[in-house]
Picture 1 (spheres, one colour):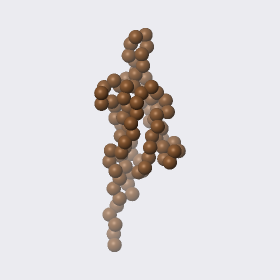
Picture 2 (cartoon, rainbow, N blue to C red):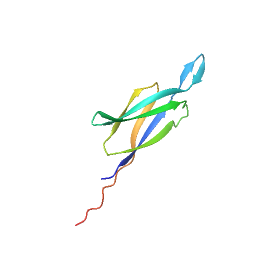
Picture 3 (spheres, one colour):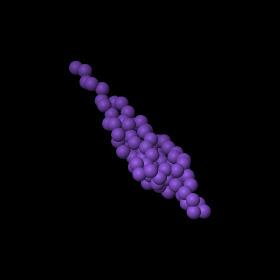
Length: 88
């Protein structure tokens, strides 16, 4: 079985400092059955409506959780894995 491709999308990554909108940091944990297997860091400012999306490749069935940062995060399957063709 091959890897699946997931999309990690971050929205509203910023903070207010002295009345100015500044960049911030967020950390996302990728989980396999609730166990952390990888971390992705996002640093900067993202205020666009569509957010910022980064692809992540891994085995099917992974989930993710935002473990630090003041933003919204979405983790979704963007391309399912394809099993190798069966041979008789």
